[in-house]
Image 1: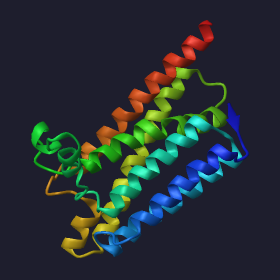
Image 2 (image 1 turned 90 degrees about the vertical axis):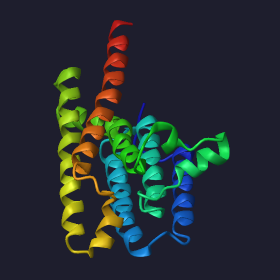
Image 3 (image 1 turned 45 degrees about the horizontal axis):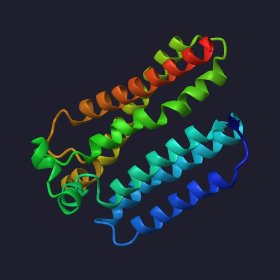
Amino acid sequence: MIETKLQLKHWLMLSILLIALIMASIDPLEFAPYLLHQVGTVLMLGLLFLCFYKVGLSFYSFALYIGFLLIHILGAHYLYSYVPYSDWTQTLFGFKLDQTMGWSRNMYDRLVHLAYGLLLYPLFLRLFQVWLPSLKPFTLYVLVIQFVMATSLFYEWIEWLIAIGLSPEEAENYNGQQGDMWDAHKDMLLATLGAMITGAMCLIKSKSIEES
């Protein structure tokens, strides 16, 4: 159901986001890069409200968007490259995730890029449904995936432009490349795959609704 007015469930999600933002702002790993990342959080939150009031969103889309921001805020606190998820799995389950998976780098930034496609696809789909209401579901599916690819590329450009104005150490801490020359390419691929997965689920759901 498409909604254009904030209800209690929306305020609860926003309250969780605010609490996470406050907690993440307590002694972040490095304050200047943290602030740069949180500028993106503020801009994305503004985009969410704009879309909500202008075209309306389902609570499902709204909640997934907030979920993405929560993942991003956690990464901002630890500068992405230093999120200690392996320590957490060691404490909770008795194994280090990186060691078990054979990863030689911190993979949290990869998760965030995958989540960009997985979690934001429904909101992007809603926008295209409003802008181009006569298009068939599969055409919308392709367009949204292309949009995710284009915006992922644009983000990598912005990240690069910011990084070249920083010292080498600050740039590394900000963009989390971790010595991988193909980092941007892999990030964009994961965002695309995430959009394809959620998009396929949306296609199946729309087809089942049509047949029922």
